[in-house]
Length: 405
Image (tube, rainbow, N blue to C red; front, top):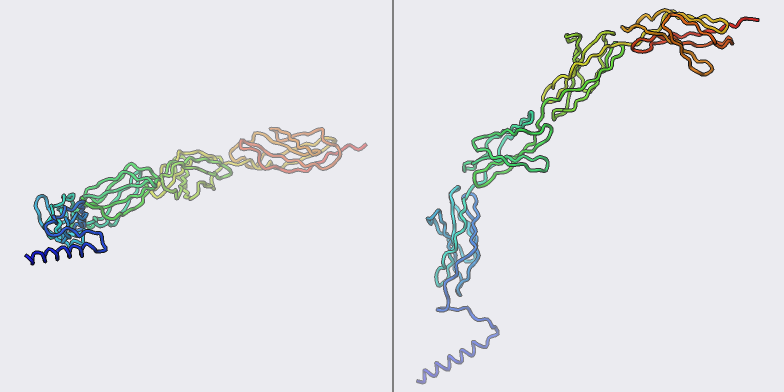
């Protein structure tokens, strides 16, 4: 009886001692009050090369410190492996998995009382490699099209599914095109000549895309047809032209072809949009065409344009003058050269009292009256005119001869 009382007093005393500490915190339930942990939540699986990284949120420990986690690896419906990690970790890297195979993961927590229920399974993921970049990417430009070719990308041990090609028009991204892995090229058509396009090519194995390979290309064709103007002069023709359509590539050269009838008598190449064709026969009709070239080659020739080199008549020959009392008479002979255009008239010009005066005739002589009768020298200019215009003048100095009283 006494021992029972002693035990009761001792228990009361111990209760008082323990209840007088400085902390208000209650100790965690122990012994029969602890329960199993709750199931972990938010299980996320991120695939990599032959491995998956699994993360989760820690569950309630049920009043007893967690000891560890068991990560269960599921392939289809079968469990293929269990990996245990310490309770201090909420992440596990599951290695030695097959690339291309699908896996899902669940996590179980354990404390001293036992194991929790399994978490919900993660989404199914597929471990995979990232393929390499395509090699030797080449673009061949032509009329409204670009043809791409490349060497196969390194599949890193996991078969490739396809290639994706994305065109970029300046800052604008075009629609990506998928090409089977068995093909190593693609032609884009139609494209706009002269507009640069950047193409980005990546390899794809069904799960990941490899690094980008890119190349820029500008489709183009031969230049359009030049529009030509011809201006003839003495034994030469001055040609000029313009080309509205360059074909999408800078023009590098022009070729002028000179025809006499249907015979090609000369070709002239130049980098300028003009040419002077010399040493031609006056009063002879020539025809001319012009072609433009760029990196794609020679474009179509212009329409034939006709031109006849010619020149003004030479000066009248043996021009003479004789003066009298208020009059002067002139005479001359036709020019030595009319250059294929007959003389139609003659012009006699002079300046009297600061005023320019002209007289015209179709004859080879002319008689002027009402000339100032002061005996002073006057300058006269006689020139011949053809369909081309007035030619070089013959210059004369003439006098009137007043009668003496």
